Length: 172
Image 1 (cartoon, helix red, strand yellow):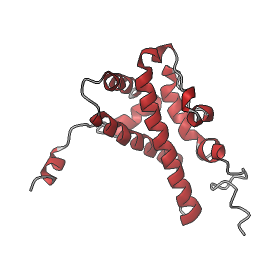
Image 2 (cartoon, rainbow, N blue to C red; image 1 turned 135 degrees about the vertical axis):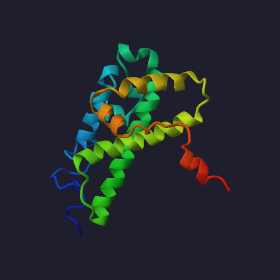
Image 3 (cartoon, rainbow, N blue to C red; image 1 turned 180 degrees about the horizontal axis):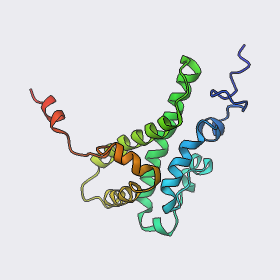
Image 4 (cartoon, one colour; image 1 turned 135 degrees about the horizontal axis):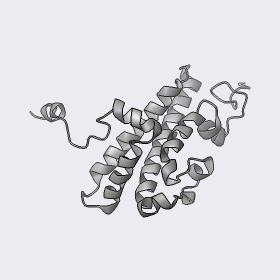
């Protein structure tokens, strides 16, 4: 009944495979390129092969001593981004929403990742070595390419302590 049901949600003529929908579509691929640029210092890949097979996660010499932290942060980022892609796909496909502009993809992907990272950091023991390494990785990533602008725009994106406003709202 719907001959376009297997075609890309974003109007290109490609068949909507997992690989296309989550990675290769011209609407989607720039978000992965954005993150790839920031993580290139550590040799981390955002290829479809790496995303679809976590055992293929690898780093270069800059990332060797930080590999566990890098993999944790990368996994949180890819999960948050895949969730964003699928949520937006469904809004466009089934609720007639318009496609997000390119800048919104990168910002929402970044902010979703930061929310996941904040939660993960809060759940770790303060003296956990992977947590400490993750903070080192984040300090490096925050000055890379497009991340620098987003960390400047959202300076509290990794705020771990509750704010005064949150503290007041929980008092009775």
